[in-house]
Length: 331
Image: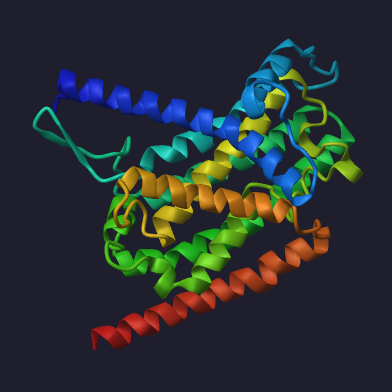
């Protein structure tokens, strides 16, 4: 079927709005984190640039764009340039399958509030999350620096470990919704969110996406005290900014996925659906920030032990328990 000009225009409009909103939210999430951490630590955060420091993200952007941008002489030039894009782009693409509101009617036709309603949306998310691993690994390798390489290897092992538990935690959600489509998963939570039925899966997913975002207590790939900055030690200017922005875009996207899988998506009383989705997603983002201001970094052996010997077996047991419960309910 050939798409009409109106369909193309609506698709382009949704794409532009989502892209603008994600980048804006990522920029101001950095400011929010700095202010919240300042509040936790009883000090003042950024408050000089603009009213209440609201123009600080713009100042940070100007600083990154005007800093000297260099490539180490021994680096693999093309891979060095490719790695930052591989870290940021998959996070943005993941948002394409997340329904962020109830369908609306425009010009007599129903328009779903998501960019692409894939019937394999969960697999699409897992595939893109695995691609993001390469950005970190390639960035560490291409820099030709021992600190960067060590950070990249750490990150590669960490993300592979926690992607397994993250994927397994979503199996009970798929079993309850009977679909891989994120739209169908949200529709299945119209009355009761899945966190009520799957609190264990939610906790496993939340811990796993914290590790996916490389947030404290799982920021082993960066570990400033021992690796300088980890896999992006040799990056500067806007290339470093892409790694930095990619991390915060990932926080927003994974907050949206936690909302979609476990918190009922855009469903909620009184407020518009988009507002509910935003509130729930930002609540998950606040959880990430709160943990950064509260918890110490894990040792590497503790991180791997938690992923392989605690979360993964627990996720498998939860799958078996969910299957047993569904079988009893059907009999």
